[in-house]
Amino acid sequence: MTQPLPDLREAPPRLAVLQGHASCQPVSRHARVTAKLAAAQREVLVVSSLCGAPGDPVTAFRRIDHANLRRGVRYRMLFPDHARIAAGASQRLAQLAQDGAEIRTMPTVPVEALVVDRAFAIVPAERQGGHDGAADVADVAVFRLPSVVGTITELVECLWPSAVPLTGNPRPRPAGLDRRDRDLLSLLSAGCTDESAAAALGVSVRTVRRMVSSLMDRLGARSRFQAGAKAADRGWLEGAADD
Image (cartoon, rainbow, N blue to C red; front, side):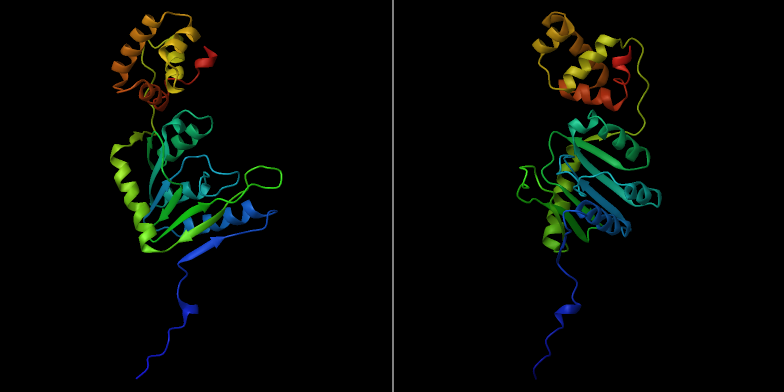
């Protein structure tokens, strides 16, 4: 006996692309991504370099994230180390951490993606540049394929243990940390060499190395960059330009 063919129109889509016309594209996609995040019940995974195209809703900071956290949705978020000290981004990350998001950073992140309740993944899909040569805003793809969702989730699980946690409650600046210490930490977090840091501070390379060694001990850092990142995370660099 021949079995009737299933009505494919009733099957949930495995891939949906959030599109829009150029005039309303950022708004339409942001609203639709926000709606999907608002449906989260258990967990949202975020992996972002914070370097998406203008208006990219995958790499954006969203109010819905704070609302989800307040109603008990777990957030685990991976960002590159430079987000700790980037203007604007560091404050947004601190606010998310204070609201309960679990945030970690690593030198670079390998993908841009959101995973909601391990049921679907939202990823950007780049287009060609616009007529003026600028990068066009990407469409956003929503995957429900278990293989895609599972691969992104497993990637986050593999990277998570080695990433450095970002805390939402910076510790007070310790006594004895003067302006030159903070200036050096800022230079370290920017990736400056000992020689360039010495030139910027007007001291010898030997002095810089002695200062670096002392600061790394106080911060429990394993590298110069990590010392700068940890100092920024703890709020030690705030107000350095105003001293």
